[in-house]
Image (cartoon, rainbow, N blue to C red; front, top):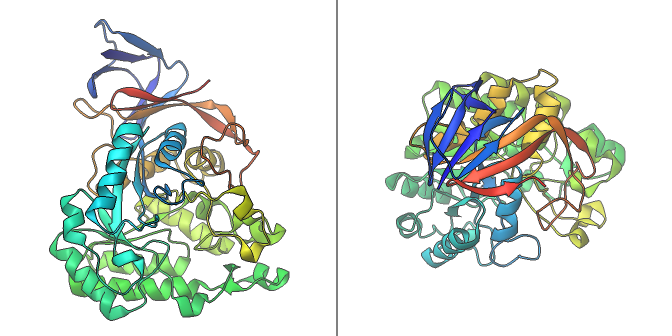
Length: 423
């Protein structure tokens, strides 16, 4: 089947260019000023931008085991609505994705029912308990793209070094959730002025920074590829800067919420502002924006973490950490960072597409002849309102509930097929 995308501006080499695009089967066959070939379908992208499909390095699909929150079907539909064509699924499922059978289950279900590509991240340790190295080599043979105990952090430095050495032997990137449990304690929000004012226990930035420092040193010793998830403090960023200057194989990601929200959002006790790492100070937020703009941060990842209403509608200190992020990521960042000229549009798009693809060596991220036809068509002049009725995720836990922001996803294509179409 052939499809032509006409009258849109296509994102090529960091710029939006008035071009047409021909899709033949699963791949992009041509990008040109005018395409005269006959097609089975013509998509009129008048007034809209055509971007590479977004790639999320960090998502929780809750399948298997917690499918009342999300599953591969609902999660990838939500991803497609947000312009994502690929997501990397974290292993904190029930059971934990720490063996080949679990990896194959996710891959098969995604292949049969997914609206986006799903790449599996295997557990770093067995059952993510931080006690014994997982079956990394076997899982890699089954197709995992990285290992992580995300949501948990290996506290034992000797075991962590062994994990990094083992992963390095098989060229498997290690993704870490940096958190020193003793320092974090039972903290609920950032250990700052808001925590003091409203009487909630705090999680200091040092709990993140200490583990980042440790893991960088361990990764250097092991010669391992280290990727730091959801970085959130200015000092953490400085540690990454120093590691990169020494030529270490260290990358990091930032979430949309750490780029636009601060600890002040928690002052109303809205549990949809509760996440790990917590929302930090304005100084930390500005440092993240600056690092993104300068290229120190390597990607934007959503940390999509669905929770059911009954779990979030509790007292703040009893509610789980995490928010959904697929459908809000591009729109919120476009509204609050691009339109306010804090970052450029190409910085936003590249950090959602080509840059995450490079980190885990994934296909996609750019529009070019011969590439898979994974792309999203977004009208930057229309608006989106995030109301419960229209959110495709099973869970609705977002601080932007009922907010209206600029931009609207009109279509998402994966493998040349429509995975999302605006009503």
